[in-house]
Length: 462
Image (cartoon, rainbow, N blue to C red; front, side, top):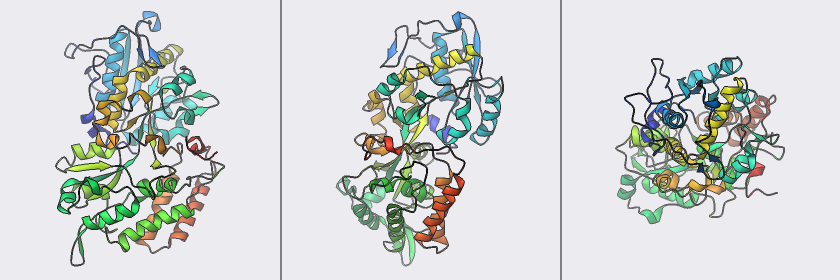
């Protein structure tokens, strides 16, 4: 879930009703907390708000004395500035300077800054860099039981009974389909597939060929078969990505082989797509050449901003049978991190800011809509604004049947991508390619502290 697309997503963000407005920007591209003369006035709440995690705006911060902290992020200025403005409207003695670093630079600059005395007190976290950041994080001062009462998946973030960040939203894959192509093929809502067998038949009906040439792919998974198929469909068949020790990969399993064989058969037997039909399935769909793709939530915003002329719908990912162990995996969008090396007064502000963010439903809705993630905050699961996003609405019934394996090292993805490329482009057989991926992941993870949290899945076999 690289963040290059986040700038485009911001068009989808909504204002924090009554709690935030647009802030000013300094010459370096960072926002300055508080409201300029040109900014809409932010109406600060006076009464406590929140569910179990509550925020009381009447509590004085830093004894009322002026204080400045930095918040680092990687390209979501408007979204972050809104929550900053909402906070500083309640606490005008606090200035929060927003510092933007591009994704490509962020993960180099941030650890260096956190290692010194002048690093940011607050910073945006992505769990794929967990091992690079965890030694710089201060634990949240909110009771764990309060977090668990309000948010899904908190237990997976426990380290020695402490929580350093949690998920505010959950992102996973859904099927995007071209409604115009669907209608031309004579398909209706009644044809939306529930199983993979049904999916393959629908994909055949959506495929168009002129002689030997593929003109329209019924289903295109080029460039993302590892992300959207190999790293998730195994759960439908009752197998985890990691073995019982939580460390040894399970990518050469019978389930993974079955998923890979299905992908090969869909292209080579069913003929619904081709490895040579566009480098990326996501681009092919946006360009009107493919009828269906499976993409993660961020794709909803990409379609609305980059390919707004595509008339698309969304449905939940099919399963091998209609009662799967789990539908797929998800990954979380993380709350802010707090720098344990920051001065004590700055850390206190940072702790208060995180509590404000977690208690603030308008902020939670805005962030989840901007990222197209399903809210981890339990009370927002049926919020009308969330359900207006079709890629989130289709998840609402079964969101508890998605698994987070934990912040797994990137080698799991890259090794499986290489395996698929070898199978499709280099003529390597499935067993050999997946065995090679298994060995490569084991080798790459020798020094990793990663342990899977798949055993925390609510429906895991205990």
